[in-house]
Image (cartoon, rainbow, N blue to C red):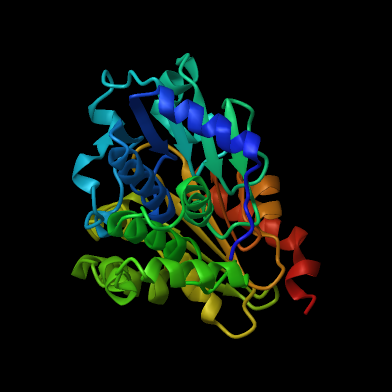
Length: 340
């Protein structure tokens, strides 16, 4: 059995907000990943089951390898439906600050509708009326599972909800290879399996669903673009807009690239810099092993943050300047990278 996360007061407050609302927007951060889409769709299925007019709205397009998920056909991309956000409640999932909404930020923050935040990132910004933030959770989907079960038990949960929740938990832990040592996670997986989900098929749907161009890009990145710094036990890969165009890059094609160099013996940190094709900046992804604090480095050097072993940020500069910033960060964190 799992301990309850919410107090009775919190449960009543959440139930009151949901009971009074009919039109509900369910949203997440820009460039949605598996945890964000899993949480948005799982909560939407829950609300549809309750007879609510719930509309999943995401700030921009999401990767093709998530388009098999149940309910995905009902998701609206805000960039294409700017005039259709008029909710009575806004549910904010898998992000801790309104600037993570990009173009959707202003309509959400300007709205007088009650806002609910469910998230597992550090330091949530105070812009919602009801907040559950648990950084110790592996994923927002794990947190959402626990909330939904506390509200009504496991029995009413549908197959569709379970699929979406498992997908989010699986993707946000690198298939349970990091941030996933708590026994609660595997208890939850066991309970989700009772709903008839096929976890092996979910894995294939996500990770065996890439284009041939993606594999050519991966080979290019590993053979040409990978730079390893043995003195820091760290690696760096860069990807420009021109290179993305050359390999017919689509959103999601570089998913997981940043994790690969961690397979190098003694490696502790992997950094991936990618020129954004939608805005003039550099997207930064960081992954680490053991106790190296990606989030500290991301906050100090890359205007970002995140989790201990998985963080991100962005830089408004050229790629060459971004590489120099990475080198400064590695030098600053030498002692933590080499102290094993």
